[in-house]
Length: 230
Image 1: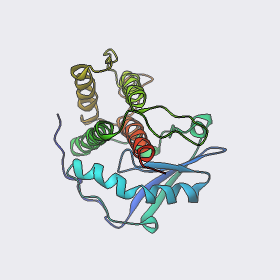
Image 2: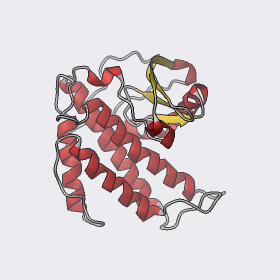
Image 3: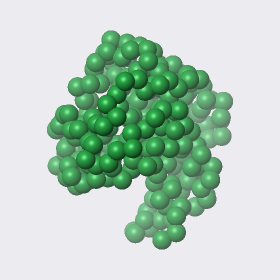
């Protein structure tokens, strides 16, 4: 497992954010913190949701042994706005930001890997503490705990292919297979690069870290929200 590293020199008073705007949904994502990404009906709602999720994301940073900025909504610095797509409206932060294609130093790469690893740890901890049956939505929908966990793992095996990793999707309960898959992902994310996609038609490391961490945390927070009483 790649160890966590210091965040390096960053402006503690500003959090760079990009905006991805679809026709019905808008995402706000913190560029320096993979997985800290929330959505709303418009840009303001998305930024408010991102701010509200800050205390939750602080637990991820703490597990990665990284100092997290205790900043509010007014500290967000929107550095890029991207047009979204049907994927955005479906509920996925899908577009590639300009910074995703920039060179990745060894320190930055190891930091990305540590935050993705921490996101998985948070998800695993939430799953372990949650009841098997979760509170249903207003229309009676929503997966239960084990189905959500299986969905995340299945998605990770697909994401891994975007990083040139060809490992079978772990079966339910295959902890060794899951550990091997995640370790392979972390090795790729934690390697310095010029910023190009890892493989042809694949993903940039910064983008991959954001998508993987967001997916894990989005479902971890869903489980938490649906575990709490009404």
